[in-house]
Length: 289
Image 1: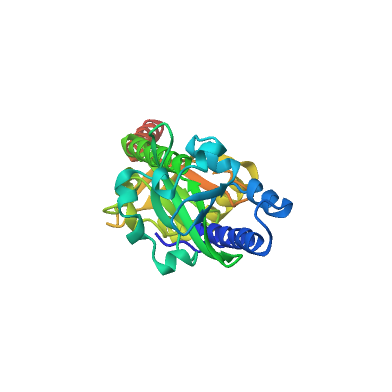
Image 2 (image 1 turned 135 degrees about the vertical axis):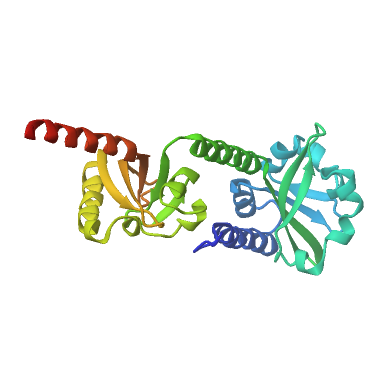
């Protein structure tokens, strides 16, 4: 999937600037100064200041809460005590010059006092203070993010399963009519092999050329009124046949001031129209008689 802008990269850019400020504050002031402490305690990530061997010299309150230790307990620990044994055994090999420069965001696992292993994102910076090398470690707890990702994935699976078992065709488009999603029933209705073939097409390509101006007026009406129901239209199929379809269209508002979407539900009513046509012929024939 292609994104116009990588959101995670933007977040990391901001995070890097914030971490640089903390590192600079530590380097340019004494440990425990008001300025350093305010910056460190206002951070959302766990922050550790360690010696070159990984012994914890200082940490913020977030670090204590994240790992479940009191501050006095934390100052008795080393970096190896805060990761699972498998990670701790390989810790020296994992820390490269690139990582020590704060250029890399490393995915790892943390180990809480309770024994719980949790996913983390770690950024490490090597600084010099008072002629001694110190390591500043930033740790972000990814537990909630992983949970949200799992819930989103499960929701997506349920949503797609529901879309596929519905007997109607489902189309989702932007406000210009470009199709963003289609279920299998919609693809078959328009004589496409798979839903992917419809993605990126315009809904106006699915109507007769002579009907396109009216279709655009319908779209404008939905945007103004919020919905359009019970619309019966004649559509061309790719094999040259004609299909009658009943369409309900709803405007779906966008989130956070983003553009909304158009949700269309299509039902094949060709058989219904054929019955109506026969009844009309019979009525006409009886009246003529």
